[in-house]
Length: 106
Image (cartoon, rainbow, N blue to C red; front, top):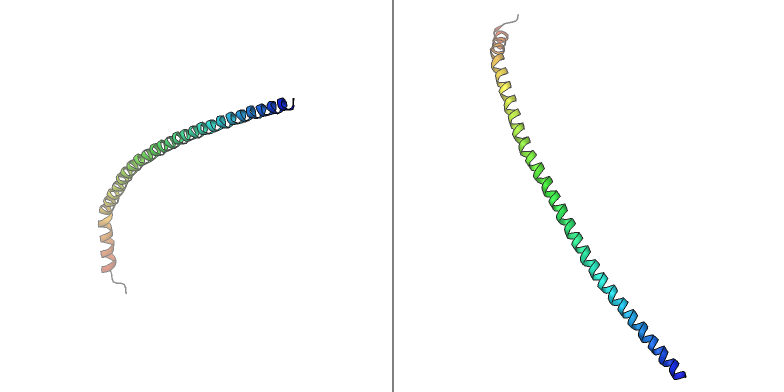
């Protein structure tokens, strides 16, 4: 009888070991699967972030070119305005300078 009890305990121990091994294998499989899923998600997030960055970069670069063009036009217009103003008042300035230079104060 004692032998039957020992055999039963050994059988139970083998069964428990098989259950533990099966659980360990399932756990390792799930960990590998989770790692692969995480790597996929990271790659997708990285791609998405990079695409967003590129879109913003293109958008701001385009604006920058337009801003440069607009500023050049505004600068050219201001320069032309100043030239016209200088031409308009240059005769008066020359006359004033000549008057002050040629006038002798006693």
